[in-house]
Image 1: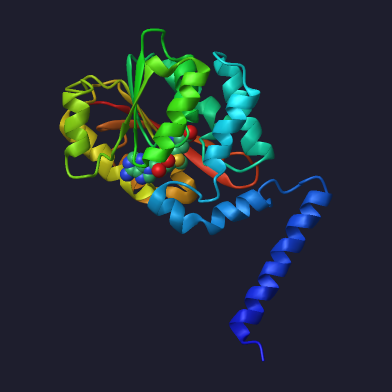
Image 2: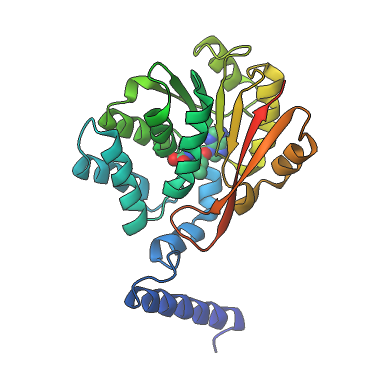
Length: 274
Ligand SMILES: C[S@@+](CC[C@H](N)C(=O)[O-])C[C@H]1O[C@@H](n2cnc3c(N)ncnc32)[C@H](O)[C@@H]1O
């Protein structure tokens, strides 16, 4: 006889399968009801630990970019990545809708040095490189070396490899990465004009506080945080709300989770007051 949990699991799998097929046949009216999104959700535990979904989609993205985007054409590389995420496999990039919020924040801030936490396959760094001043540079920190290697290949293909430096590590690793950023990459007192936070949600607040404690920001530095509503960074949001009008002044950008229009998200843009 089949046990109750096994019967429920079989029923749930059949239900999800039927829903995905029906969604496909209906021309995908529910954009996140796709195999690649469901596979992504099932890989959430591995994703949190390792920063990859575990089905090879990041390597497939790199191959897709090389095969379909014109070498040296940053617009075409960004187009190819969005195309892959919309039509082949969901990716946890900031995406095209929230990407425009990020672009606008970088344009307003006109930063000379940008620091990113969470590189993944290099999409957001590409977007920032496209709109930042011509002599600006990005330093991006990624915990997973496989992601960093994929991102570097994509930046080279787009022709911006020399303007983006990637560091494998984590601000929260006890000081090693912070020391490397300071000693090897020249990130020091008052040098960071713009920070994009898009890595482990529970690390947003401690890593921001570490950056502030290091003195890397200056009055007028801008920090943009993705996914503040979904999956959510409640302690980061509470901190910014508590500091509003004091050390920080924030603007809410109400938007959607990447590559769909149903789930809502919040991008928080915060200016450091010193
Ligand atoms: C949401 S993705 C970043 C997406 C990227 N910013 C984009 O929009 O193209 C999150 C990335 O953060 C990385 N990550 C997770 N924890 C981290 C940490 N503590 N420090 C640095 N990177 C981390 C993951 O490996 C993953 O590649």
